[in-house]
Length: 177
Length: 157
Image (cartoon, rainbow over all chains, first blue to last red; front, side, top):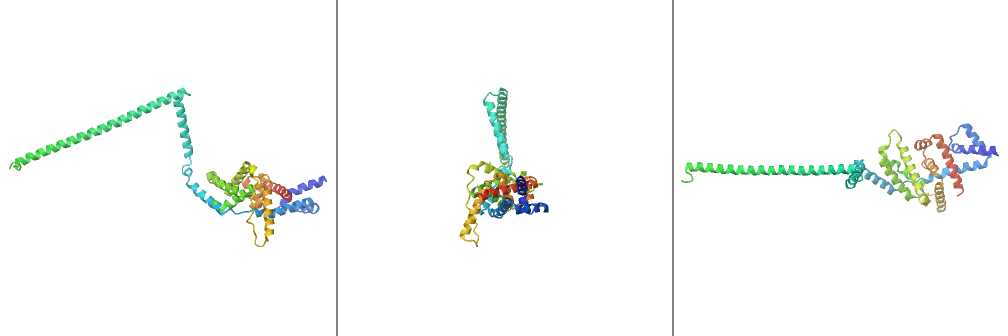
């Protein structure tokens, strides 16, 4: 009985190979002999054979609407901003985190050294902004002055020109006959 | 294009893995999004088909594990009408398909995937060995065990 059980176990391991013609001639002969004498294993073989004949019926084609949806997804994926700038999310997340921590250190005193450094940096930035504004203001002012001087010199030249012209005409006796 | 070549295999795997068309559609869609998102990581020295089917199998197993409780909702197969079969024969056939699909869901996910690859999608042992990255001998013995188990469950239905 034990020997038979052992045989059945061995034969069971070879059943798929037997069905799919994937055994050596010796193995095949052994399986054939065993199946002829063992109804239990023979039934198992028949069950597997039946299963293999029915399983391909479970094949289904993908529904048309689903295939269309996949085409649409493929199109959308190609134009997704992530594909054009793959690291944009990470860069945005990093910037956000940095801003968050800077705010935390600036408005709280959890790390006094960081807080002091940030306040110094902000003061420096404010000073820089004020100086830059003053610098541009000075440039603007000097441009205005230049424009006024230029206008004044133009009108002075015009006056001189008119005067010269009048003198010339007087000499020729055009004006006073 | 990827969709033309692989959508049927992926959908079949998903459908037979979860047993109903709605979930199969969602799974197929998620798998293709995953494929597009990870295609840059694909090593061109490997087989694209194996990579896609491995990714699909892993996704199906993950989905199955997350949705085990409501997984046994089976679609009744309606599209199996064959011209030379009577309505009664059609009904019997449909019932048989339905039972088989239900029985397939009772197999453990790894065995189910093997049966789908070999006996439904008709992949060769070599292809299955490559896509699952396990030795050929192991694939053969596991498929044999899966068939014996499935045959036993199906017989008792």
